[in-house]
Length: 380
Image (cartoon, rainbow, N blue to C red):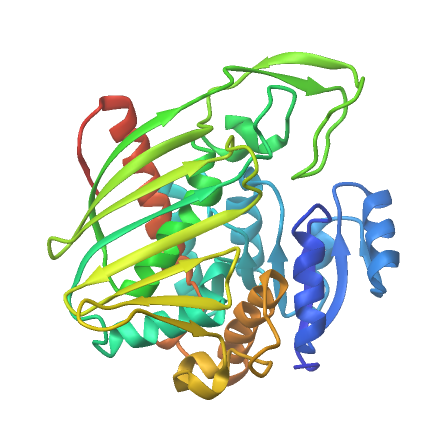
């Protein structure tokens, strides 16, 4: 895919992950943009890129760039996605797509009018066994889905001294744990099961209403710690919470999210139960899929392309016994996206997470927030 040029905006935790995934895929990554010229130059040198962009306008004016990747704070997603599409670039945006549904809805309209491919980076879909579960459910292996349960928990914001721009509502939105990691789970189980959420009931909690902000930003998944000077700052975003789901068709679901669970670094799991069987998957053992039965012994499918469906096999690069993990999910998500660009695959036939699906997650977030505030079921 060397004939497609890409640029990445963002040099924090996830920007370099995008660069690495693209380079492994064979995409021509032209350059990178940081929040300052110094950060752009440093990242450019570290990753062996050609261009350290000094501004987003410079990316948009670069005719060698066909695709823009946005790995920037949430508050910037709407404006930068809009400008990139209007400049004739394809867009891969980190989640969540926007701060509120009005913004994401506008982005869907702009993307469709532009004729460009527009994706949200819900990379969790692209663990091979998640694609396998999706194909098997579509094929009727576990019958009619009854229930979905799961969780996504972390501990990087456990202490009141833990701080990152994500805790600020003006930077990340009114929701945080739900928006930051909960949307990953919601996108994943909906894409696997084929179900749509009809209504939600949410109960959320801000564990630390005041956090101690270091005088100077720190990176995601790192702690302020030590004797660094801090200042108190009020926090209104959610640290943890539960959401009940009603799906169209009558199925039920439940999600627990937390960024304050000690020892859990990045732990997502789901269990999808149907009339013939059940699937359970866990992100810390991503190369195993538990298959539950009523009338015979349960099974564990270990990731091996020789025993997987054609669709999942397409996004599995290594033979059995050679594990694939977190960095590989980005490569495979980008593979689906760039294949669609290269072959002109329309959005409705695409496997990558589209702006339309990203908009759905923002609608869910808005409904979850309303439900929490009003303490009632809210229809999406």
